[in-house]
Length: 328
Image (cartoon, rainbow, N blue to C red; front, side, top):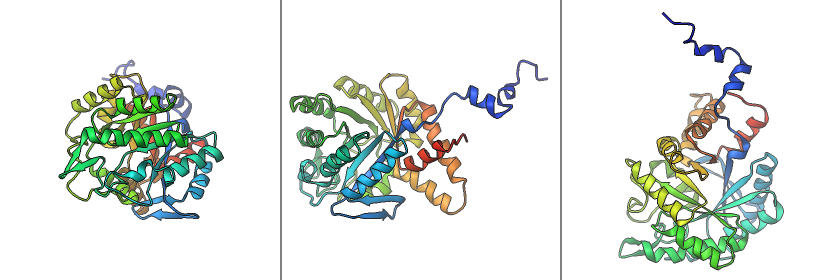
């Protein structure tokens, strides 16, 4: 028989008590909106693999950034498609390329917005890999000064924070030293500390034209089977001076987020990646799910696991629903 002491439903009896005892909440302050910048002017082209997301020229990116800011979203993360590719990705640190132009424009036109940039080489190299290549091998130490050039270029353009996603060993210390030596000691680093070699990235690689031209990224991105290794990667980045960490992907790796929460007091960000987004949109378009409710439940689950911040393509719609008072 159930005793009077065993009735958890008492605290679910009506809306007000549920609100009062709710352990976690999703806020617009948690959201970071990704932007994909391309060359040209007046360009706003929907990305086929990411419905509702766009390739944007700098002028259109400014408009989208203003929309995000008006919704209360505090930050955007900038990704770019360059005008040219090279063996070592020289366009990644070219001050006249779309990312640098977008950072300058957004900082000028939307000064209240916090600007984060992705630091990697895969969109910029002819190989589609995230580092310097020799004889079919992605060279770790030779890639570090290249990544440092990218970070300094982004800081020079006005980025508040750089987010290295390459997964080269030792890159956080090299980037921190390079930024400090260049006079950008106030520019923060948010490392993709635990980035997995995941099948969830497909639509993103289509969006930024960054699929590797040979092999895969399993020699530098993490094995999806491993969780303890993620904690080692995180601890190394903490020792090297990162200001925050990212776990990517998010949804299938919430166990890693929870474990990370136990070992650091620094902010933890998750990337609600393109494959996660695309699956929800496909199911929603087919009428298989309550799309709004599923999106908000998914984002809330990331907070519950221990994430402080969420990079998500759902940011605009989630911010609107939060403004409307959505409770689930």
